[in-house]
Image (cartoon, rainbow, N blue to C red; front, side, top):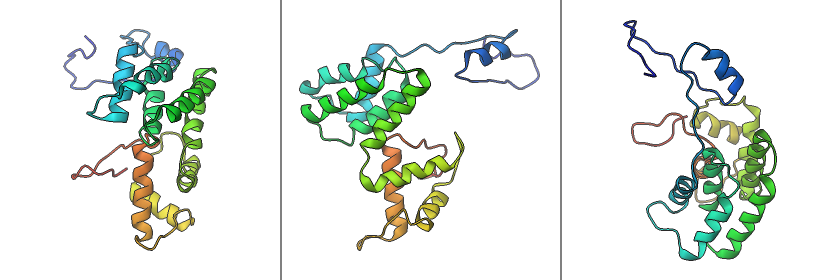
Length: 198
C-alpha cells in the first residue's frame, strides 16, 4: 500500500519531523506517522546500548525506568543517554546523578529538549573530547564528512594532542571512535571491514 506498483519503476519516500511539511507533501498520498516507543521498547533499547548482550544489574533497573520516564519515547535522546551511560561507572550513585541531570533537562520544547540532551552528554565528556565535539558545530546540520578528513582537520587545528605511545592519527582515530561510541556522531557509511568511513 505504501509503495504501489504503478509500473514506472520508482518510488519516493519523504521523511520529516515537521508535521506541516508532511501534510503538505502527502496531501493526496499516504501519510504514515511514526509512533513513539513504548516504555518496554525504550527500556530494551537503552539496556542494549549500555549493556549489549548482558542483563541490566538489579540495582540499576529502577534507575533505568527513572531515567527514561521523561524521554517521551524518542529514540534520539535514548541513544544519546545510552551512549553517556555506557561510558560512566555502573554504580547507583553515578546513575542517580545522571538521572537528576536528565530530569532537569527534559522539561522544554522538543527542540530545546534535544539541545539539552546533547549538552548533558557534552558536560559528561572527558576533557580531551570536548573540543572535538564542539568542532562539529562548524558544519551544517546533517553534514556528511569522511572520518579521515575530520581527523586531519582536528590535527591541523591542534585539537588532537600526541601522546608518547600513539601517533596523532591514532589518537584522532581513538577520539572519533569515542564520539561514535557515545552516539554523538552518526556513522553514515562503513568500510568493507565494518569500520566507520563517514
